[in-house]
Length: 83
Image 1 (cartoon, rainbow, N blue to C red):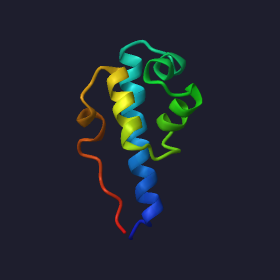
Image 2 (cartoon, rainbow, N blue to C red):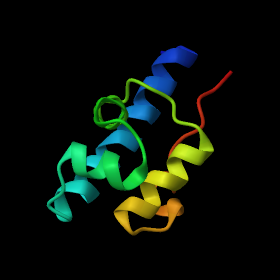
Image 3 (cartoon, rainbow, N blue to C red):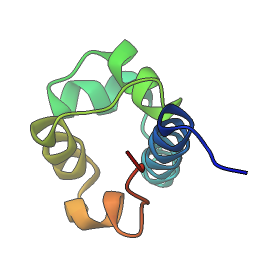
């Protein structure tokens, strides 16, 4: 069975969000604290963690810096959605 492009994207963004949440919790940060350090709104952080948005490259870099990790830690191994 073939997954639609949107289902693949949803799975990818959810996995990305799961990584952010895990790293944030390791640092004992709230979503609000992460948002402040990254220069993003706390509700956007929640959307990221739930896989509800597809972040821009700049926002990936901001979040990675705030989490004190290389951006590759957030995206390595994620599957590119099929067309």
